[in-house]
Image (tube, rainbow, N blue to C red; front, side, top):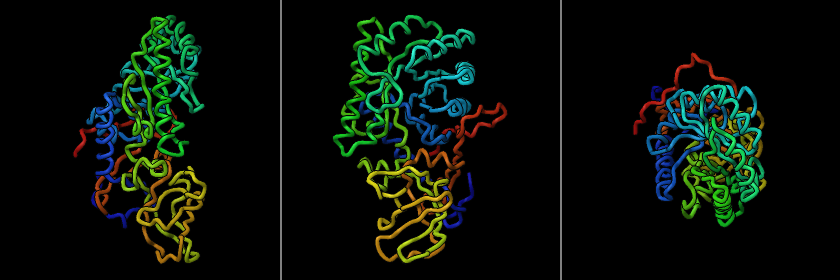
Length: 384
């Protein structure tokens, strides 16, 4: 907790979240999952926050999806006992940490290669633990995953038959190409790609006598536009807890649904149509949003302003016309990519109106092994 201070008293740049809006976003996605008849396993790489994870679990999340071993270990320390690691566990150091973690939580990992599965099998056998694996399908992103359908089923079948210490638990895909969509139809097409990739491969596995018990899909855009959850067991949206300027550009939400912003101070006015702010790429992240020229975030309450360039510690903001905003003014910028912006800060200041009422740690950044003497960051029962 923090003593109440105003936004005018905060050292900038600072990461600020609208507490009520975060809670509403969490509740709304939980209701969305229930309406689809699927489980909700949020991707916690977005927030890395024990406080937000507690709210997600309180509203029915099955567990969490994580991107790194540090996130997995950290959330396990906070009492989250059901985790999916969304990247293949390649490397002895990952496997060592993975099997150690499997002694205290239910753990699954995403894979797309038989050799990776067999390395996991050997590690589980040596450690005397059991870990589930989900085979990832490439439904159009061009990142992890194999081609959906019969060819992948034929790759999975011999591996599933050969593993006894790790188990084939199901299928996993990610419709990240939704972020390249030009319109609502493109978003819906990406959501269909997810569902069809799972359905085609699950059907082909039946011919081998193999059941895909878990059928996991996920992204914030596709979770928004899925027509139903038939054939899917869980969704894995992450960005929805905050939303950001990218989700606004995609037409998913209005700016007022965005719960996270970077508080910044106008430090110079070199021209009537140009401001300099004290938030650059080290505070906002440098992700771009189409179309070109859209800038590096949305300035709350000032649609006439565009963040046109980021240096490390400064941002250049231009105005569509003469601007009378004086030096020293506080502005809030909704970043283009909330997940990347959060990773640049060690805490989020929770606000209610113009007052800061709490400080939430961004607890699990980086990739190093977590120290055994770390105190839990506080996965306490959320207060609403």
